[in-house]
Image (cartoon, rainbow over all chains, first blue to last red; front, side, top):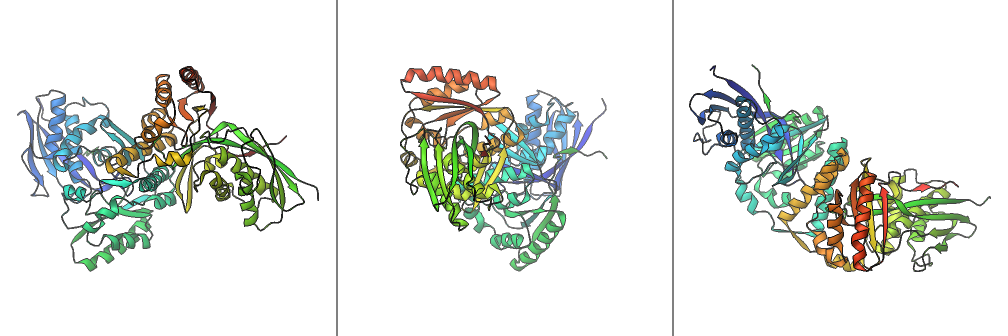
Length: 312
Length: 312
């Protein structure tokens, strides 16, 4: 048998998206992880190499990519052997779906090597979720689903899984700034209030309803007016050095809205049009240079394709 | 000057809509209130007659229609005189926007008699809200806005007012059953929890995001899956005799979903297609006959026009 291989790209993602805590996410065009999956005569999924990171485990039981791939292999009861090479472009712990990207890429690649036993890409989500769970400790689709499918995604329910694709307004761009500080998702969760006043729920639901409508109606002003989070952002803002300044800088520079990506430390802004995004990026960079913290920045349209095979 | 008059119809509305507490509402085609507004030489707004109800105040300072009309007259600083005749087809206290319908009809009619100083119908909402506030005690647009504009409406914010029109999926019908029992909105508000667990907020926001997406994407199954209210409905269900049975009957008969209209006592169901709605109506009627409580029923497509002038 001729050995087969496939190369797959899966994008970074922004989850939570202000008022959409645990419910809304979207994919960006770059950065993203690439995985080369090579069929091997030796059954089981292994990590051959991780390029671009030396902190991610090679042990296949501890790596999100191999765990996700193995979950799919087990599901179809295959004896296939797969060696994964991970080209890690999304920094672990950056808050833009690093583990989801690797888990999704591995799941997608494995399905192809298996001859596509899962016909509908949508149905790959639960396998990737099993991988991502290793890293995040939670069984959440809000990064995995947009990484796989592209665009904005509503996770109506994680169990049973119910994911809704919203696509994306054509002129929507995002700017992401990743301050090089450590935030543990589990610690960040502890900052959240256990209870929320009913009045705050009404405010939050009004904004989320407006945001979903704005995304589907391509109403950029409505998107901006709705990007308000009165519950999670106030609890977490202090964990990110300079968050308030970054957000205000983005809004002053013309961003539609801005907030914490995932549980941070990355901060994202949504903008109408590339020129606006460029301006917001420059101002956020300039503002953050005052904080003496190394940082990376990304600027990207909303990714509408999700995970794709890379044809050499 | 020739005396002028105008006749206006404003529909009943369903607010809250399961997971959309204080945020979502829609208009139904019937019933609705009709108001005849006649210009008079005597300045000020008066109630000439109320046809169909003897419990609604004739005192113009206490009647939602005249208060709304007068608010608009004051806004444009006019000395116009207006006599209102209210044809009351929506029962007061039924939970389907009775006061909003009268307030909106009066506001719309008054604007016409004044020569349309408010150019955009949308901008009539705050005046109608001032009228409805007399009856409900709250400054809420969730009945007023759909009564005026038709279709589904998101109230993103009441202050500052931000209302989003969603239109309606073409095959969507509603069935309403109004048990003849008294529920005071103020009492019903007291039953609500002051605080909500964060986990419940995530569930509720996931459902509301799904419901808004389903309405805009015309995805009837998604609408049905999303019509779940884990916060307000459980707190209020016991105030409506037979609510659980009515809801279960509607779902068993094929309704997409069902819930409390406003703060009750009316119960509504959404259905795909008229035939389904007819079946749901029949089963709800049959079920409710066991409760020995008089009731009215309504079946209607979603109203897409809102408030209209009636040309004789």
